[in-house]
Image (cartoon, rainbow over the protein chains, first blue to last red):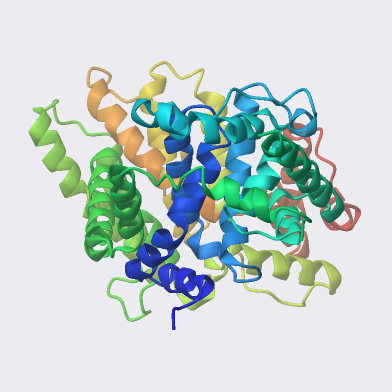
Length: 183
Length: 308
């Protein structure tokens, strides 16, 4: 039986570097894609991804297993992304604004030349729809899909009321569903 | 959770599962390992810090000895008194000013720098030792001036509250003499021609005159000698050095004394009254009021010291 994330994080805080490797292996892919599809450039995404993990490493002594480890990790990711948006001139209000936080299509498989032709028809439409979402709705969707967070956990990670998190996720799903139903 | 998102989730999974580059993985994992790895420097931190503190302390002590010889020994000598069985109980107070005079007024011509340093180091025990002897030589009946200031103050308050005792041991007038000497020195300093020599000499004697507490009413070190212009006007360097030495010792001794010498002076005058020495007390209170016109004497104290 695999050790739960929370136990691994506590073990790492106690000095067990191996526990962190297991945690990292579990969460690196989802977190990486969460960041990658939240920003427009792969280089930016890699920098942010690394900074999020470094913050988690530095905060290990303060970690308390009050909630799921993934909620704690994506809270760190959310805060780092908010900082990132601020440096881009986007306020927290505009993150929720329908028209204010649309970014360029994020880097994904379609950005790689060798896969661009192959995935263009099936993938680009959904990717463009995700990129067209307001940042707060996109974040809620990615937290749900990549992080596996529930509405309550999304609310906790983004420090918003549960109803707000729920409505953001619902708006995002409806828009994306419309986008793929058009295929 | 969200109705109809199964299909959307499936389509989203089809987007691909990108992973971070391997180099990024290694960098993050290395950071994680470094964060919890025991630091080898911590093993040496404690011994190194202790050694650094010791070196620093030794350096500061050495520096203090070079800058102000006697400062580290003069203060403890005044703090602690030797056992009363110390030899030469009566001769010490008379010797002290002489040795201090040697320090304050060196007649030897200026020597080379290294010789000066050596001579200063030689002088150090000379100046510190008599101070210790001074404390030790004070017999029990003369122990009153050596009491700590807090005890003095307590006693003064007790004296103020209680009626004066019928008979009291004769108080040593040395403290007042010293105070007068100090004031005379400060007043006469601008007038004296070679002020550089006069001031240090007066300052050098003052602590010993005060602490000497000799029962002899005639002061062993009259202020006049301190104020007399020294014939060694052509040797300013040793004079300055002596001044620095003496002022260092005086600074320490002055710290030991209470913060308000005016109160002590008033206590002294009150004591003169209690002993029936009204003429001296009248002169002293007149002088006190002349020198400290803005000082408001407390009512209880005024009752004890007012002219009669």
